[in-house]
Length: 257
Length: 257
DNA sequence: TCAAAAGTGTTACGTGTACACCCATGG
DNA sequence: CCATGGGTGTACACGTAACACTTTTGA
Image (cartoon, rainbow over all chains, first blue to last red; front, side, top):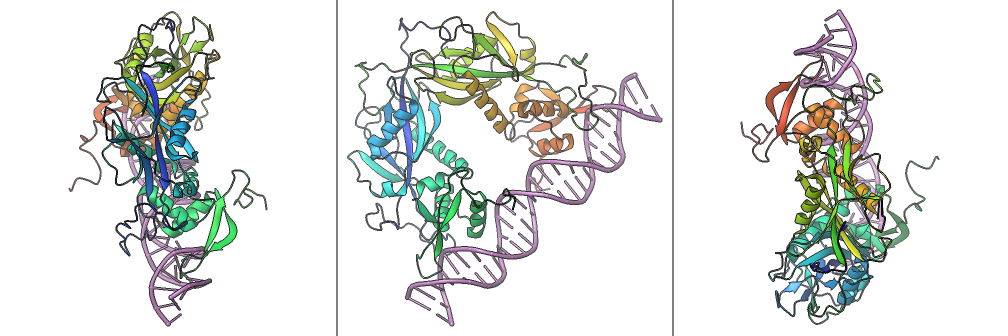
């Protein structure tokens, strides 16, 4: 907050400042079935890991076309210009990389060690993380020098971007228990299984289906649409939607009778 | 992370960037052993509020000597110059305001809305919060244009610094359950009552003494020194110290026998 | 009729909280 | 002796995890 500095004399240039964004989206294993990128169908252990159709998280990276770290992959970014808010710059980077607007956007951390980039150029980078909806994500056509990678199989990254991604995943795991970020990743309507698969993808562990059902319904953030979705040779699942906060009529215990 | 920007052409000046620090310290009611200050024993409801000598948190503010917000109080700050890490700049601001080094320092958030300062100068401010030990804090002699305020009785603040302080307190309340920040505020050796008073000051509520004792000891972060401290006409209290992580011999359940 | 996922019910367990009670000390 | 805070024991509420069990569908 610069208590005493003369702006007119720029004897000491301030460091350059930019935005980096960790963008997360689900790959779409079953929606609109067709053009799913990377159909390796890894693992498929039948009983233990009962993630029958657990989607995986993917993240878009940009190949660097100049030094430093030429040729390596980096987080999408944008310089910060006057008159832009930090969120504006993060959205810019997101749109120019993916073509979409974020369903969720939150600041992560400001990275500023002078030695973090191998070159000498001083740089402060303010990192954000963002979520893209599944519908949008299913329509990505990869631009040159942009590629979507599964979160568990990343290439070598420029700068300290691997650290930033780790931090973003940590934050996502913190948030998914109390926020509605899972509903930002799936579509507007979803079964509890689909929602659970999202939680499992973020947490990278299996969840007990009955307990997940109870806890997620008790949170009161979602409500049934009345529709059902038949997905296989088993009982069809009810569809749910995100319930706008404060507008849920079916709460438990607050209404007097 | 500025993917494509020509540093040599500075057609668009990047915004100015600075550091703000929320510095917290305990006022020292009883250190230097003898005369326990503030023996008012307020309330003295026998069982209810037994916060006999709860210390209060204090924060140093700097009076602004120029526009905008001339005359109001603001967080200590520092511009960020080349070659400095963000932590360096935060420490600089802390030292130049208080004369001490921090016992704890953590980044809070980067504030960057262009309209947040009432003037038009664009500014990104990276906020930190820091803790000062009780011994150091007891030796402060207030510098001109610097004053320590109790956290619950702050003056009108410049910029959005009230928001930043709220955010710092929120973060402190999050951390005090899992981190050792309470031991950074008190001296090297302390009784469980003193440590509990710190927790109560941060959380702004009373804690049950027996339960606090059990939970804090179960966490394994502190260990008894073997000494006791007589503080009044009652049973003396054991003194404890911070236990270096991994070096605590008296854990429960991990050693085989 | 059978496999598989949807959905319900119940129990076990750890954690936090409240509170009764004993201990040690100075006045 | 007694008020006061240090320190121990214990019971209860509550949220989470685990798992047995029923329901509903397609093959």
